[in-house]
Image 1 (cartoon, rainbow, N blue to C red):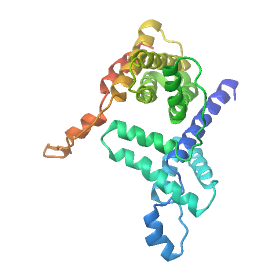
Image 2: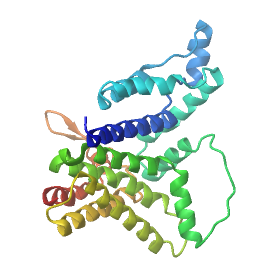
Image 3: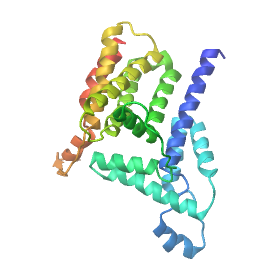
Image 4: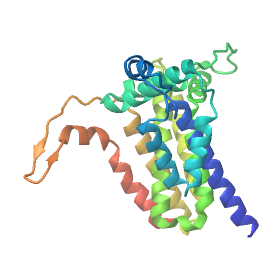
Amino acid sequence: MTAAVILRVLCALAALVILVTVAERMFPLRSVARDRWEWELRPAGRFPRIDRAGWAQVAVFTVLGAGIGGLLRLAVGLCRPRRLSAVLANGTTRAMATASHQLFDSESAADIYAATWLRDAPVRSRRIRGPVLPALMLRRILRRGYIPLLSVTVALVAAAVGPAAGAWGRGLLILCWAVPAAAVWRATRLRIPGEGWWRAALLTVTAGLGAGMLLLTGVPASPVPAVAAAVVTVLVGGLLRGRPRINDDFGITETGLFSIPTGMLGYWASGWIAVVPAVVAAVTW
């Protein structure tokens, strides 16, 4: 086994560890809702075990990690203290994270993600060094640790697959990078006069890092159009997915064969136009 293969395997394992860590932080494996404990488990004298949602997580990570992911997810989830107070607190954390998927308000969903991540997190007072606005923006991004962690995960996956990613893999990777870019655009929204230039600068840096991430899969044959298309993908995806979005149209169109929730599709597919430059970047890389 060559050093390059070993390095790719280590990158894949590191990406898997980060994903498991984020999942345990936001969707704890061993958790229970307080009402289920009060009315079902406590009268029966049973301690909460891993429920269906927890086993679904294990199944997903088993597929992602070729078996190793499921074992790692179980190990991380079961190594936490087996105390009733911790399991009940985990139930609240998971309920918060799950509720975000049932909302059709991007700002409320993002706030729930941040509150879930920061739940029980220590609060430290720090002096602000340098310009206030960019310092506050960077602090908000770092406090939402899932943003940099997911970005690192995408980069590790790119390093793990390398040139084997192919055109479709590169397009998928740059689209995945646009997801944390949208989170960066949203996290830097302070509603303070003069913030626009700093927000644009941070998003541009994120887009540049995304183009650099694709270099881990190989050097492009046409560098200028490939890198430009990758940057445009991240910018468009970040701007469109990171803007405030609310859906109050729950209308359904009947086709005769199945129903199409047209209003919800518009909410979910916001920013789909970023697929076009992503395809250009993948083809010209």
